[in-house]
Image 1 (tube, rainbow, N blue to C red):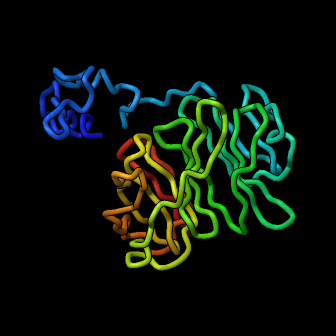
Image 2: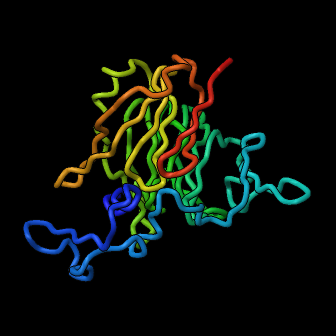
Length: 239
């Protein structure tokens, strides 16, 4: 984020980044360039060749040139999918499915088996950030992080502090999406569009900071949102 922010402000590189007087990474002791973090370009094109996916009658379908075809695996046949997201590399999928007692969040490989990682009464549409193995979702009002490690095991990485949201927009969080670079969050709270910055503490815990209302001209009628690029988000409103 630091490198792309400096480059976007026309500050010439390379960028020497130090912590306590030592290089942040010895491999880049002579400085970082945007080429070193090209995969995290917030304005870069999508890295996925997955194509267009839609939810039809509770199942995840792939749009082909001539028809809709269910994806392989349970999400293509379950009939209970409420929302879904695909990682930037097109390999992972996160979905919210309906259960007899409420809703559940499942994660896995696109077209493969999925694992239930959380259950609740209401779970928002999941979101991948810059990390293809990290998923965000709001579970019964709590902003939660889930991570998949190198072995394929999925764990709850903890609750993200969102205490400041209520002071800006009281109400339930109905949508929450992370920007491509993982540095910012856009949300809909009680129908109000909200933007925030993701802050990471030294112990690895995360919090939403710099929370502010956005798109004042649509009031509290926001219904959905999505990031168009690393710094542009689109909100849809009810009419």
